[in-house]
Length: 78
Length: 169
Image (tube, chains in turn purple, orange):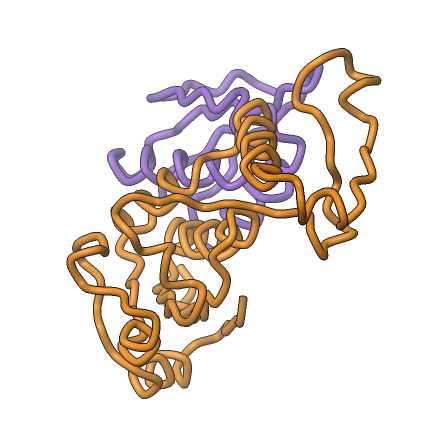
């Protein structure tokens, strides 16, 4: 994965459903269209949940990775 | 972006465990740009109180795991089968079960009901209290948090008629 430059970072480590989604939405609302949010989560459900959230809201996941129980998402505000 | 979807929930249960689904789903729906309404009726009404005092009981609920939130992982995985005769008769048993569940939620990074409720309000979820059951059970508006609407079946049904998802919890 090529390096994605994030405008903001949100660490949701340790939080469980639905907090990562709620915090992500709150953060995205404060950002400008086209900006990228880097969100880190340790909730194993968040991989599928983020994808569903993205499908509904239209904010695109432009990159994601997982390593040792930690999931990173790059979300571009629509 | 897709068209706006609507979620309609009836919250009819007021124990600590069953308080979660309505607030989780309504807050998540709002985060997914849906318009959500929760209609609180019967035993769901206490979820609107300013000061929440929610409890959980394993009595009559054989599916509820009784596990300890502390100790080694193996110890925490032990399910303690508590007969109804004990859970229903030992004074303070529900308080203990409630404390254990709250502690487990906290350790697992689950939000409290208060936090989820606050996030619902912040994100524009509509809360409607059933006027009829309020009168039956003697709840007063002053006991409830601000921003609650007071109405009956028709108001819920008006929203639910347009809803894509409607749930009875």
